[in-house]
Image (cartoon, rainbow, N blue to C red; front, side, top):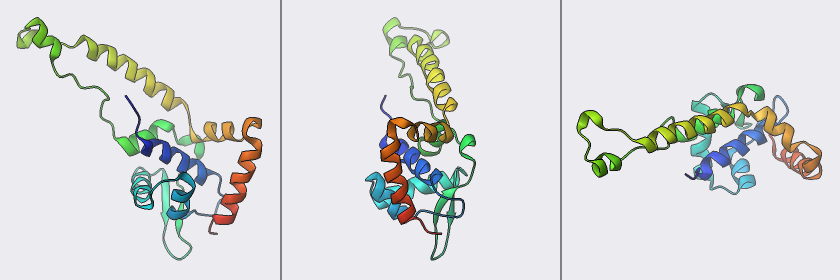
Length: 160
């Protein structure tokens, strides 16, 4: 399994928006520039986040995007679902049924059961972490100098 870059870019876009003062917004072009994403693809991701009520789109000359929820209420899992949807990561193709020549009533997928358990664990971790917890991490001493530079960049690029 490999998570698509859209999820990563979306999480970091939301983190950027969390660094804004209350009334400020960031333009999608500015966000895509910072994240190294194509502006068209970033617009698509931001629309998905708006549809999920994670962020808000502000129209007009001073328009852009900002958070629509408190960072404590935005789980990494919410962003994942907004971008990727709710589908399961694994889908059995019936190989075991064919190998064991199982009748329709006896069909099963032992790998499917294992994958369901693994997916439940993975989801649990993503549901545990929030934009607030990730923001706390990037504002720790570990990244202090870099975060200050990023905050300066945001202050320069934001629209109030």
